Length: 247
Image (cartoon, rainbow, N blue to C red):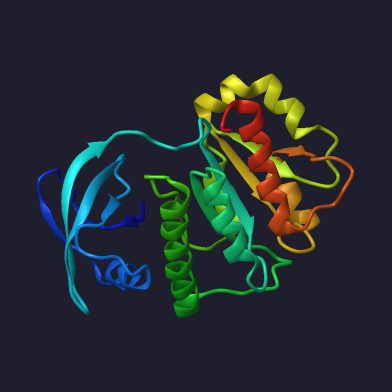
């Protein structure tokens, strides 16, 4: 059944005019009046609905029952990701949503190939938000992961210092296994959540890594192989899901 995100209040026994982006998607899918769809707005749960009317630039849906089922991970993970070049950032954001990430923080690191600020950063932010919505439609999540504006590593670390969440830094110099730590501290991590810091291509600089450790971040390893930045965070999310019950 096609799923659509709508930024609007949803209630049973109501008729809703669908937003333009959803109307375009309906036409692409060649849906017809009477076809069943699912609507969600990020507030939790979803609503069964049927298409009531479809025009060239207009469509409406009649909303029925509310379904309270969720597809969230049992552990709240904030992925603080150093900006990656090309389409790598798009790809990893989409996949991180599928793997249950609860928040995404893009970071401008000293070794980031991409430099974002001003209007360019705002456009990229809107693009990433659209990717998050589409990924939630596809994977069955009813709650949108929070996307925060691009920040420098230093600024984000300063704000993260007081957080009660477990603070993890993926580093090739770390000796502690992420899997072993998750098995040992899983219950505490489920309660407090995790902040996971991943560097860009080339990793974090020595100064950035030292600043992270000074802010309470613990270095963790995924084994002897060096993973690309677009792989590293996803491997961590998959590891946490496998050990702490997200799968």
